[in-house]
Image: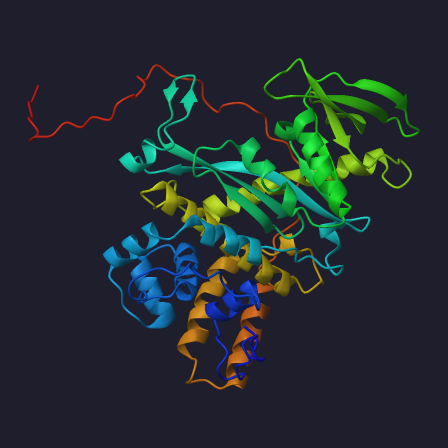
Length: 446
C-alpha cells in the first residue's frame, strides 16, 4: 500500500492502493502465473484480475464473487460466468501462485520467530468440511468413524508455517484424496535455509524423518519431531545433558521387513506435568546433535511452540472463513478456496508484522481485529483513489495502523487441553441417510 513506484514502473499516483496494493506487494515483481495459450477469443477477465478477486472474495464473508470483483475492478460479470471460469482454471495456476508468493517474512527485529538464529517453522495438516454434492462425494467420499460415515466429505490440507508470524511458506491440498502424510512429503522441498522444522507424532517415524533429514541437509536446516512411542530405536550413547544419540531403522513402507536406511538422530525424553496433575512422557527426535549449541531443555521449550500451528488453523477456519463448510460445490473449486484462504493469511501476516513494527511480538496483535480493520481501510483507500491526495491517504493509513496497534491481546496462558469428549455418546439414533418429511402438519388436541 505504499505510494512508491510499483515494480512495473508506474508513478506513485498510478500505483494500486488498498487491497490491490497489498496484493501487488504479496506477489512481488514476478506477478501472477500466466495461463497457457488456448484457441478462441481471450477471456473478458484476465487471470491477473481473477486471482486477486477470488482472494478478496474469500476474505469478505457476505456477497458473491461477482459483487466482490465489481468492488475491486468496477466491471460486472454474471455469477454463472464466474462458475464456468473457475471450473476451467487449471490447478497448476494456484500451485504456481503459492510457490511464488509464499516466502519467509520474519526478520531479526522479530526475535520470537527465531531460536538461536534458526527460523522456527511448523509442519501440520488439517481437514476442511465440504458440501455433500455428487461431484464431491464421488471423488473424496466420507471419512469412516466408529459410529459410521462422517457427516460431510473432507479435503486435507498441509501447510508449512513460520511460527512467530503465522505466515505460510508452502501449502499442499489433497484434491485426489491424498493423506496428510503424503501432502506433507510434497512440501519438504520448500523448507528454507537455517530453519528448525517442528512436527507432531504423525511425522515422528523413520520413513518421514529420513525424508525430512535429507531435505533439511540440502539447505542447512534441522528438524524437531515428536516420536511415536511404539518405535524402539537403538541407543548408541548418552550425551552430557541426558539426551541420547540413537539409531533408527528406516524400513520400506510396503515391505516392513526390509530395512533401507539407518538414521542417526538425537533423542530427548522429557516428562511434562503440573503439580497435582498427571504427567505425560514425550520423546523428541532432532538432527541437532550437539548438546552445547542445542541444550535439551531449550529444544523442549521450542517444541512447545508447535501448538501455534493449531492456532493458525483456527484462524483460517473460525476467524477468517467463519463457516462450518466451504462454499464450493466441486473438489477443484474447494481447493481454490483453500488456496485463497492461505494467501489471505499471508496478507494478514504481513499486516500484523507491519503493525508490530518490531516493538512487540507479532502474535500479540489480534488476528481477528486486524482482519476487521483492514477490510474497511482497504475499501476506503480504494474508493478514495483519485479523490484524495497521496498525503491524505497516507495520513488516513497512519491513523488506521495506529488504531491496530491498540488491538493487542494479553499473553496466552500456558495450558493443556485433555484429549476427551465433552459428553459421552447418548442414545440418539445415528443419522446414516438424509431424509425429509413433507406435507401439511396435522394437529390434534389431546
